[in-house]
Length: 445
Ligand SMILES: [Cu+2]
Picture (cartoon, rainbow, N blue to C red):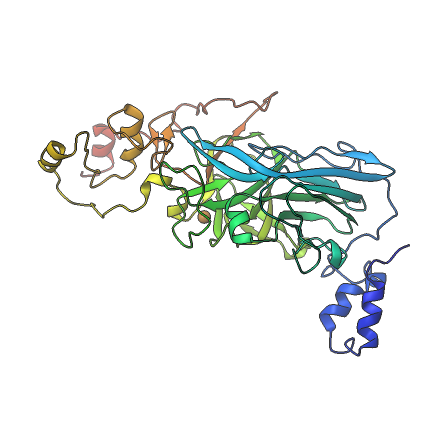
């Protein structure tokens, strides 16, 4: 059995680092890995297993608005090919930009494999800049870690590099550019890397992979701005801002897993699921032992992290699933506004309208109205831009945008196509109170 870091460990020991390097010795003493306890992320030794088979060893993940990266098995190795290239990407209807992604997608397709698999990943660089790809959270030989300049030469434009390593762990991981990250990640160069457990997998019926990221795209611009540090105005799940996000369709009582990763430039995201509570079962460091899992309704996903949550979707309905930062559930046009809350603008619009044809005052009390005005054609926004929030819902305008999607839990479904809006049983939907009810309950309005 090959031990890929034996020589490094020996070298460190010889240099006298072993006694001081508690963390190092734990990370490199793989001979003890199976008895080391749950703190050790390495859960199998390389080279013992045939390639894992979808359907047999695992239920494939679903990447909403995205896809999984295809592979071929050659000589017992799973062979993948990532192509870094420019991609014309639509964030939501009405907003497109020229981004950097992989294989024609923003973000890159999800790489999916099984613990014990050996993977060979070719990376072709079709960009005009050098790059390098890091496999985030994976335990692998240092030379495969993908930090440009540090662990390998840069992949120059036109070159194809080969990475190869065994997967010795399972969990929710990522891949992303590790050269000129500020530029390359701001333009979209990231994806998810899911490794299923080899033994005794806990199956989920619906296993969703979602990457959270943030962008700055000035209204009307064609390129995301990598220089932005704080004011991100397009907030995405798998590269899509609501209403561009596709719904998460789930059968009632199915076991749902959500793998939520965050490779935003500067922001953490409290990820919230409505109508259900969930268990936090893993991070990008691996699975959390059962005794240490905890219940939540919102889980903070810090930058450079992944959180895996699980629950049984026993509550039918249309449920919001979103980042809880209020500025992360709005879109582009909500930025750089003056505060007009409570300002009486009556008579003002007319005066400015004489000077600026088409001028319309921002509603002082309801910023969500922006989306409605745009939708109804009252208000014009720059070409290639999307309104501040929202889309038409079953009852009214949904005043949300950005990192927002909808989980549709339905009894007895046979297809995961969008089932349309939920039809609640009679008497279970909030509505205007009647005067009889108000009288009966002594409510004065
Ligand atoms: Cu957020």
